[in-house]
Figure 1: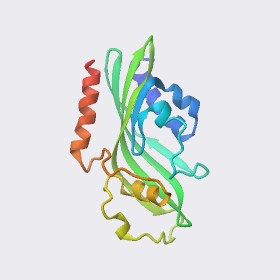
Figure 2: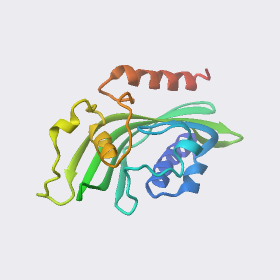
Figure 3: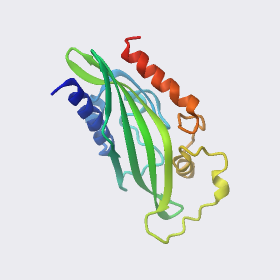
Figure 4: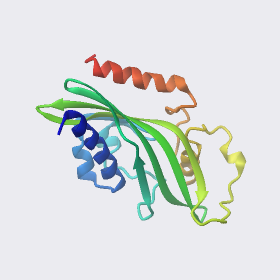
Length: 195
């Protein structure tokens, strides 16, 4: 395979491994010193991301991810990838089955070391999300006042996390605040240039 094909397959497999809860396969996608910055995780991938079970996810319920074609920017032994992602996860919300659908742009920085490509960084950019009952006609008993102050790029992810007893950061990277997005691309371009 070409480098572009290898890189594309790697980021797609990382998403599959994450969605299927394959911890060792997920870990193998990352270098040991890799970092992540996602909605609720930040730090070394092996400590803050791989094998972690967020409070707002019930792994006995469906988790379905769909990715668009990755866009690969490569220069020598470095690359970054833009991967549009849609994730739907089912959860219980005050005794009712609900579905959260989130739209994100995943930005991967990758490096080839000793002939092997692996991920050095994953940063997620929140774009939007929705919340709906899993069974049509079910009243989720949502109070619109509960969404006051939650960011439009990830308000339902935040809401369901709070309802599950978790905490949120209202300063995450999101397209509703473009000033949080541009630095992600600036870092990726600098990475590509070897800086």
